Image 1 (cartoon, rainbow, N blue to C red):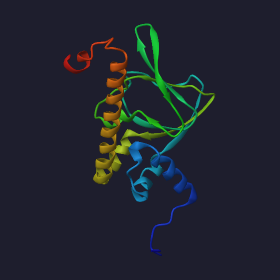
Image 2 (cartoon, rainbow, N blue to C red):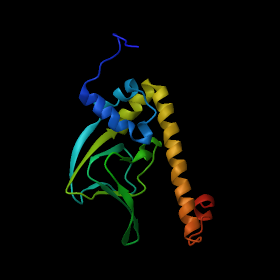
Image 3 (cartoon, rainbow, N blue to C red):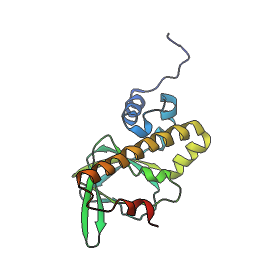
Image 4 (tube, helix red, strand yellow):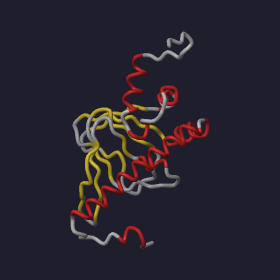
Length: 173
């Protein structure tokens, strides 16, 4: 039923909300809830091979790839191992939602033109303080994402015939 009092969104706002909703972290939020994030998204251009962050940097923002691709690398001694690439329409750096966390990998731009939306942690925390339901929904989606990632690690472990000792990741301090 048509509601003449329903909030109206600009086509630009609707487009950005639909873009965000494609990501698991934002997928469960309503238009009204997504709208809270829009003024806090900062678009930044990056050049090829520009570093977004290094492993062990404090986790102070969530990043969303608008254009381009981000390469995630893990430094092991003097060499780097590529963990994967983050494509357009995906986010990375979700561990900023874990209090006091640091980056687990290096994030480097792969394409000549890369545009990232940056959502600073300070803004996220303000939103969570004012809208606890948004916080609850996003943490639930983050837990689901983490569960999927752990399953991928277990599958890779099974396929590699246990080349590394999985108990090291669970029982060592």
